Image (tube, rainbow, N blue to C red; front, side, top):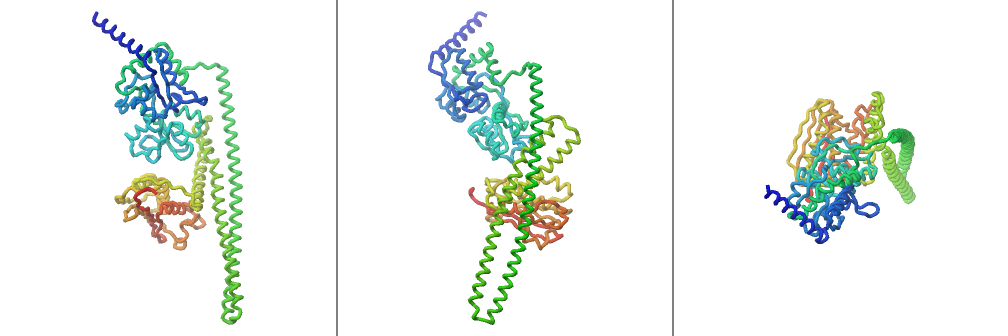
Length: 586
């Protein structure tokens, strides 16, 4: 018993000496992330603040320590601790991999990470299903370490900090972001992104949040662990926690409840009014654009008739001149002049046609953008109505909203196709090439279309050769394969569909063959032009816009590839396309 008391006294004296030695020693340099709210960040006034900053200051005051807190990029902060230029990281999630280089304090918070999606993307039920997307993460963050270790096949985009990563998401270039839950929710609220970003509901990497020192610096860690225990006991920790994360229990007066109800009612009425105005404006714009399009089409038809008449007249004159040349050689010069005049007229007419085609492309692009602008908020509002954000709706209202949403999505798809065609015609189609597995892309497209194949009771045969990984835009080539498969399914009432890949010396080829209705020979030469379809009869029983194959041709040619087909009416159709094998990305 006496020995135990002596041991406790010795340990107490040792801790006191350690605390005194650090309180009297050189200034302790503490480092943290310069943009990781609400844990640590530089505010609008240029002051470095946050939960971690207040924690470290409270411990330093409690233990009489002289400290200097320095904000850095997170990647640089970790390197600074490892090379010994700083003494302590004020907040970091503890993982087995990091324990190899750092010693961690007692935990003072439990954190976890989450996946966030742009609204409108279909819900994802596992991290493995993120494979088709590029995931935005913070460089050197625990999330990046987790994905590289457990999901190395998922492509990552590394942002300097989580705020930049989230803003990359809403800029439209990316669709998936993953990071710390508390920080992301803080940034969503700061930038008012609640209607644009949603949680996927895939929490992962739940772990202890600690302070850290370089491996082996246990004396300094003992001092900060002691200070952490003391501010938890004296209530300072709870005060700091409530300041940055809020209290779990709040008492709200009746007046505040009534005010909140009134504010919510006002907001819902405002949203409903705005939605109605947007719908009316959209209808008005759509009617106007439709009228303009019909007028333009009428003018084009009239111009084509006029041009045809001019050509016929000029042709008749030319024949007459040729006949006269055989009879009267003296009128040769006059005949030449007449021919030159005709040629000039034809050239002028050709230039006018080119200009009209250019105006048509510009009109399609402008109209598509104008039509698409209100689509996103409309879809978001309709989805929020269905989910009950603005109150419960009855079954009849739900069916009506679903019908509107379905037709809105069909209109959005049509607008996207028109926009793609205008980009292709204007040579502004953007292609982002990366090294990919073409067979994997083919399989993913087949999986997407299998329900429709099964629904029509069609046989499916797949023959995939061994192919090298090549450079291409995965999203664009997926679009081509799905379009060709969709046509094969659509125009094959019964029978089978064959899909195969094959490698040649300088290219790879995809072949999609069906046993459907085939393509009439009279439209073979026109099939890849916009608004041309195999079922070009008045009934148009198969539906569609006639833009798909035009888009496919534009995409394949933008990859320096080739697309063609073989078909006989009532005996099926086979589509082919090739992609070049190149050694490096161009």
